[in-house]
Amino acid sequence: MNALHSTLYFSPVLGKELAPYGIEDSHAVNLAVRAAPLGAASAGTVTATFYNYSHTLVARFVPEVWDSASPATVLAARLRAVDATLRNLLGEQAVTSEEMAEAAGLALTAAEGCTRSGRPLYAANADLPVPTVAQAPHLALWHAATLLREHRGDSHITALQNAELDALEALVSHTATGRGMSPAWVMSTRGYNTQDWSAAQLRLVERGLLGRDGELTEQGVRLRRTLEEETDRLDRHPYERLGAEGVARLTELAGGFARAAAEAGAYPADLISKG
Image 1 (cartoon, helix red, strand yellow):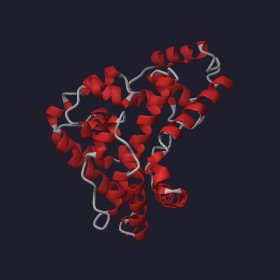
Image 2: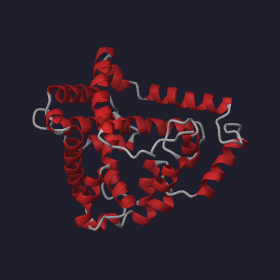
Image 3: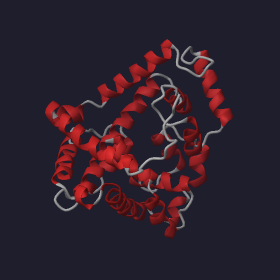
Image 4: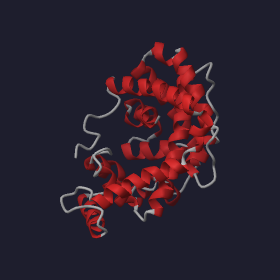
């Protein structure tokens, strides 16, 4: 579901939708679109809820971005961009298909198992209007994917804090698994530089989580595995709500749409870490 949700952030349509309001910097676009459900949030609130962004980067654009476009204006632009992006990537037949409507229904059912307490980004998105499955199944699926993504993300932040990993340590250790964004993408989109990165690496080395070669130690591998297990535990209720058969079917359907989007060029070729 996260892969399908994330197509928006790499879509050129998103920037085009916000450019008329004077929001043109890619960082400002990203911050505004994801933070808009929170309302006219302060820099501190955005940094806290996003967790892994540099506060210096956030404060360059927030809260001034709300002077260019209100959160309501940004949310409307976001939904238009989602509509165009999914139509461009998947095609008209797919976005109006019975499979799309089925996936949307399953995902919305799962989202009924989410809880607001302690999950600010999920809770903010949960207060938004739900697109109608019958009229716009692709928008309903994207909305549900966003709810599930942010619910898991908020749960993951709890696990990271429990493990005493700060924002950049979390990113460095994740990229070291070889499954996260590449370091270059992390630094360019989250507002860090090579000095920041090296300092975080050193802190992880001192904790015995990272080797001086940049690879996770056995202790580091165990910690990352524990983090995912703990996130799964905190995030289990939506999938318990849906049931094993429903989860399998949703995985099949959403996975197919995500693969089609990737094949259509939804994501940059250098996005994922190769190490």
